[in-house]
Image (cartoon, rainbow, N blue to C red; front, top):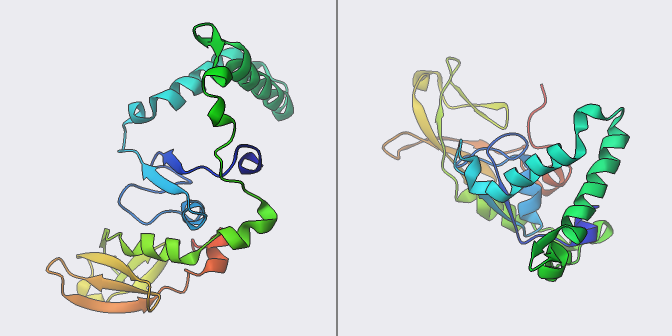
Length: 208
């Protein structure tokens, strides 16, 4: 709904909590879906809310203006938020007594149209695969000899339990590759949780 109204964004700046994922690790399915649409992702450094200061201040303004603790229902809160957003953008003076909408009129639309019905033409698996291939996190092998990726255990070997290993995604074979700290490959395992269909349907993480 938001993309249909404002257009597809060029980039998202997000924190490291759910549902976005962690800096330097594999993104969540929501982030992967956006990457497939061609939306760039920027993860702020952990515990640095000032890196997204404008949004943080905007949320504070929303809380002060809307007084959510006085709302009797989610619908009432939504109605107040929509009114606040309109006043903040279109009425409240920003620069030279002009509203933010007047000053930044180009922000009414990104110039990248989005239609949910046409998403299949916009979305590309190659963007997701390329992004995943560029991430090499360090993971700890558990006491059963497995490494968890998207909440699913992948066997690395009982002899490696307790060790730290590097994990890399191979887009050509759709496999997870595991290597020790010296770069020696230990094993490869199918990345059966990764597919265009599962990412688009936000169903990558193993549900227990």
